[in-house]
Every structure is written in C-alpha cells, then in structure tokens.
Length: 140
Ligand SMILES: CC(C)(COP(=O)(O)OP(=O)(O)OC[C@H]1O[C@@H](n2cnc3c(N)ncnc32)[C@H](O)[C@@H]1OP(=O)(O)O)[C@@H](O)C(=O)NCCC(=O)NCCS
Image 1 (tube, protein in one colour):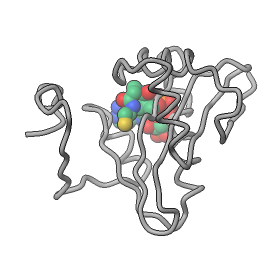
Image 2 (cartoon, protein in one colour; image 1 turned 135 degrees about the vertical axis):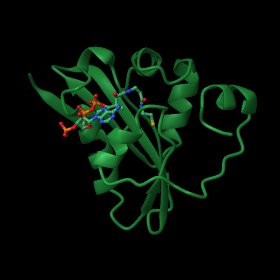
Image 3 (tube, protein in one colour; image 1 turned 135 degrees about the horizontal axis):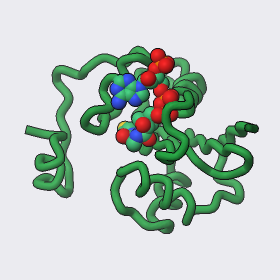
Image 4 (spheres, protein in one colour; image 1 turned 90 degrees about the horizontal axis):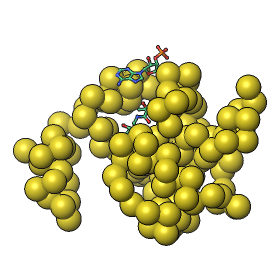
C-alpha cells in the first residue's frame, strides 16, 4: 500500500473529492462547490492510497496567528488506518504559528482530542442553515 500526500489542487478529481466527502457524511456539496472551496483555501491536503483519492482536508489561515480547519474526511473504506491523523497533522504542521480551530462532527470530538485539540468553551457560529445545524447537534 503506497500512501501519497498532495499539498496543492493540481489535477485533482473534484468528482472524487465530492464523493469522498459525501461518503464520509460531510454534506452534499457537488464537485463544483468543492473545487471552489478547496481552491480558495490556502492550505489543502489530499491523501491517495495506491493512487486512489481517499482523504481530504483544508484550512483557511492568515499564516501567522489564526487558522480554521474544514472538510477533514477519510472515505469509510479507509478509516481507522491513521489517515485522518495524517491529514490533521499535515495541515497543523504547515501552519506552525497558528492557533487552529474547527467544529468537529458529533461523535468525532475524541479524534481531535487525541490530536491535542480542546473543547472551545466560548465558540459561537452563525450558520446559513441554522435549523439544520441545530438538528444535527452542532448548536444550541
Ligand atoms: C474523523 C475521521 C477523519 C478520522 O479519520 P480516521 O482515518 O478514521 O482516523 P485515524 O485512524 O487517523 O485515527 C487517529 C486516532 O483517533 C482515534 N479516533 C478515530 N475516530 C475517533 C472517534 N470518533 N472518537 C475517538 N477517537 C477516534 C483512533 O482510534 C486513532 O487513535 P490511536 O492513534 O490511538 O490509534 C474519519 O472518521 C472521517 O472521515 N469521519 C467522517 C467525517 C468527519 O466526521 N470528519 C470530521 C469532521 S470535522
């Protein structure tokens, strides 16, 4: 099994990115939306196993103080093999001066805790689909 990390958007198969995110349960955005989101992010990572794209992650940062991580996902067929850790550590390692924030999917808090993240006690979010986010357990 050969693992390859890609740190730019060159030649990325956006249909596959959308497929991985959907399979991992992270929303239903199509290939075009995903492409825009990743291309507009300053720090991206794509994980290939034997040249198949199976994991993704991205961050928005000012590169010196603050960064936010989004869309960390590993295809269910490849979860539990350390690839999620690889994605988050890759993004964090490339933003060494930044504080990192994110909102974990419900039930994934323990994954981030293992990687050194701590629960935000004053985190606030203004979501465009506020009711859906409340129903999914992200907000009060
Ligand atoms: C969350 C996710 C990225 C983790 O990826 P993964 O490749 O399965 O995780 P890893 O194998 O790298 O796990 C790293 C460590 O976290 C632990 N871990 C993984 N998921 C966990 C969970 N839900 N709760 C607690 N610990 C967890 C693993 O046991 C492992 O521990 P170890 O290093 O002591 O062996 C993956 O499950 C996923 O894509 N989930 C769906 C999408 C999602 O919820 N993404 C996060 C949204 S921000």
